[in-house]
Amino acid sequence: MNRILLGWLLCVGLLCGACGGDKNQPQKGTENDRFAVYADGKTLTTSGLQRLIDECAQKGGGVVSIPAGKYLTGTLRLRNNVTLHLEKGAKLIGSKNATDYPEQGRRKALVFAEKVNNIAITGEGEIDGSGAAFNKGNDAPNRPTLILLQDCKNVKVDSVRLSNSAFWTFRFVRCDGVDINRVYVEGHANWNNDGFDIESRNVTISDCVLDTDDDAICFKSEDPDFVVENVTVKNCDLSSNCNFIKFGTASAGGFRNIRVYDCNLHKCSKSLLRFWEKIVPGVTDPITGIAGMALEVVDGGFMEDVIISNIDMKDVQTPIFIRLGRRKASENSYLKNVTIKNITGTTASHIASSITGVPGLRVENVCIQDVNLQLKGGGKLADTRVDVPEKEDAYPENRMFGVMLPAYGFYIRHADNIHLKNVTLSTFGNPEERYAIVADDVTQLSFTDCHLQKPSSGLPIVHLIDSQDVTMPDSWR
Image (cartoon, rainbow, N blue to C red; front, side, top):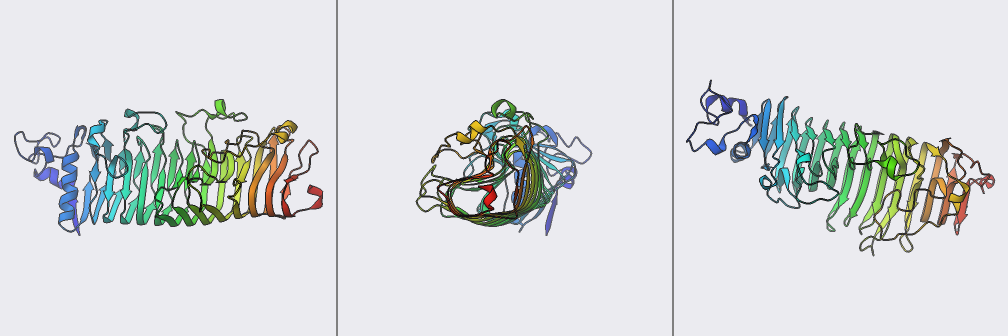
């Protein structure tokens, strides 16, 4: 295997002058000037780095090893069979000039690959996107993703630090075979700073730490002809000012055979753009996440065979949010066969968990098992009489129906075969007067070995509206 050592090339003078000279200054007047590699963090060095990658690929592939130093660059394009290895102390710094990022596939990117195989990004170095230098605002245009991979096979990313993206941090689209380990993500430089945006198959993500302003782990499905499937996320530490684990909103294709387990969810290190305590009544901490897990199919497509387990969450407004809706075409949409188990959590708002479809699109076969949630109390009797809107075509979010649902635990509507097993719901703080559970237009709802705190108002624990085949203790009615 070829191994191109950038430090050696610098020394022998192939890139930046003779050994012993100032390696950050090229020899004037030579045709190699534009291919020089500078480690001063100030001189744009895209061409030199790209030449190393291209030459390595032309020789059949290998490792391009970048030593300690700061390398200012625009878009770098990975090639077949090439590993980009960032040694400890090496830092790729994204140019602040948008013209240094040509349009690539769906979006601009600092590191890009398309239709290549056997690529890797490894090492203890860092890729910094200089994201604060670009347009700000939700969905603001002309901002590069930090890493964007499209239609690639056999991808490995190990140990690198990804920071300060101008948009999404790491997006991989229609890839097959992605292995991500021990990656650290910090994304608070701009809006839309997701951590991992997954639209690929046969993916494993493990032992990663994500600290993001937007969604930490986000499954997306924008291509109606591609199914996101066979994905495992395990043993990760996730913090977000939005959703910790999210499916959607894009769901044009579908999600199948997804496993997320052994993860800790908690508040971010900072929140520079969002101030939930000013927006959501009941939230007092300025740094909180929206939903621990948000499973959304609202743009067509489907979801099935999803298991989320062994999750500990805190600093979250709503533990579980499941939504099947009609924001876009949805004739063949469905959401079914979901298991959420072995969950503990403490909430930071009054917004209950919810499992909702819309008329004609019903959520099916959801099991909530071995779950213990401590929920922030404070709901009033008047909140149980609110008219919960359908909002069939609305953007899905935990507060889409309002910040005070008639239940403090779960609000369930337009759903079939919903089972709660060994679920404990308790409240803390102010007295809680709302029902524990409200089920509206639900069939085959069951409660097994559940312990649900009684409302302080004297209302029943469970309130049923047009629901059938419900199995629960008579004392709860």
